[in-house]
Length: 486
Ligand code: NAP
Image (cartoon, rainbow, N blue to C red):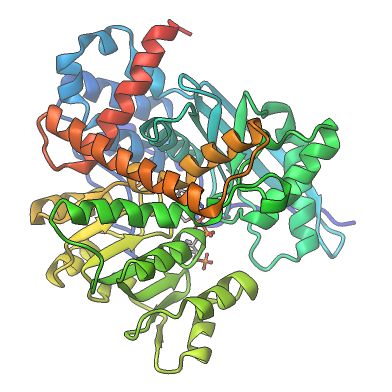
């Protein structure tokens, strides 16, 4: 047996000068996909809280970005409700309740011992048990898990369901690994994680690199170690062993339901709209499916090796076969659709569209991409992924009057349906596809309206980003006040 160590390529907790991060917009990376922020927060009190976050969490740039984005919109809330500042609610929200980092040793097919790092950040449980997915991707480090966990607090609050915020994952990459290797990794991961989770404590689910297969192996190991069939401990389970109808489709469908509500505010619909979706994973595939059902045409989608343009409309059966059945690269799509083009360099956002749905990963759509989309007449951008648009891109959309839906609102359908799965598990019930999809559509409509109401009330009418942050924040903040200083 040989011993090797897997490390996260390319990134990691970076040494950073917090002062520089606060005041200076750093140059974009070579690929122009930086997510760093530097625009000062205008509200003095919130600016001080942000400085403290930078000081206490050096190098966690994605976490800084997520905190900056929320704090930047809360000035009008503090002006109206000083009690939140008096009880240090925002500072408490920025500090996770618990952060768990652990070693994950496992044996690969060649007999070599591999070491990965596992994370679970239990961020806030004011509204309910921690709830949020697990991400398996080589780029995972504490800063990514904390940005996702922080966003999850507000997203879960926006759903109106009793769930707190958390997130976890590992720098393990399932890509290119055999089924046996993925299973052994998941078992090793759960061998530590099981002691921290539970139906009333913390309920993980999937995210990038964690789909039905991984949830199955994780649940199997949890059951074996605890000797309990505790369905409510994980969501995203298979339909025959405690899962919910529509959970697989929920995030993509929910994003499209949200955009449908945005279109309705302009007396419009998906009918005849040209749509570009980035990614070709779980969120992207089911966003494509629902767009097509509502009469739109998806002309392009992508993976990390390039993008496919199919002006006749992405063929969903081919896409699912390539990505779900074969687990192949997207370039294989053109084997079955020879008129389509696979582009290896460049950006999927160069493809002209009316509606853009970034559904791949954080900071995948930067200022340059936003300018291209605006130039091509794109009127709506909704984040199926978490924080896929850089701050520059979001600012450009606002200036150009493009309707912009942030991920914590637009992609909340996944976690909302996870909460429906928990309800079904608790009552030992299972609902039909139609009933569950109707519940999802209602929930997305509710989130949409809550964002617009909060934006109106706090002086930024039509601003979904401010509305999502404010509506999500107020509910958590009120619960934190009620529960005392804990
Ligand atoms: P997934 O099934 O693993 O798919 C991720 C997709 O994004 C893959 O097509 C992947 O391509 C692509 N991708 C990853 N990194 C990329 C990069 N740097 N450039 C271009 N493409 C890249 O994951 P998912 O569940 O769909 O999640 C996608 C996003 O949605 C994430 O931000 C996640 O946090 C968010 N989200 C997911 C859910 C959910 O229920 N799953 C809920 C809310 C939010 P490769 O295969 O080439 O890597």
